[in-house]
Image (cartoon, rainbow, N blue to C red; front, side):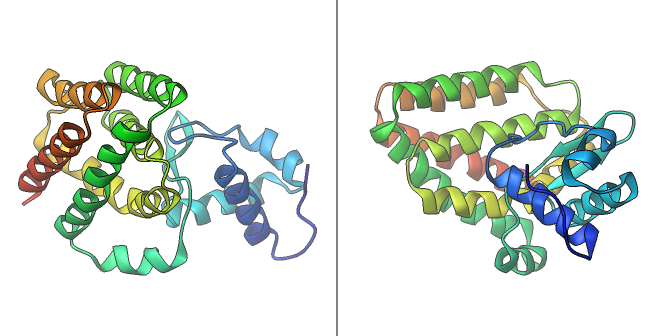
Length: 222
């Protein structure tokens, strides 16, 4: 396993952690190993690991939950998107998601494979099971939406979606805290319907359901 060899150590450690996340070692929502495990893997001390985690948290890739651990909240941190999305109004981000995800849902209905369906069903089941904690629920929701985009088999759409995740996740967590309710059956049923449309190759319905869901989300954010 590659280790840190040059200073600044925290920057190098952050780059290596991000490379492992990009490579799929930890999926969206996964908990990272502890500092005592990561330190030897990277060839650095615990304080350097903590600083590397802080750097990636600042870029929206990781989040620390007190008493729980460090979790993956984005699978990449495209530098060009970071500046754009920090300045963007969240409604603008949702509008861009509508363009990306409604197209992706239609393509997923057309192109999905049996493996894609299995991944979507697992993501939907995970989403259903994670309704008690806001951050867990948002992470599971993002994972399902990413599985839909992945099933489109369009790498550019996947890259665009990943660029939105840090900005979107923060906004969703804040919104749900204000509303005080989340994870209801009606909301989950919409996601079930999207999966059903993808499963039956109904391109138009999958795109329409995805757009309607995100339109509703945009209205709730106003």
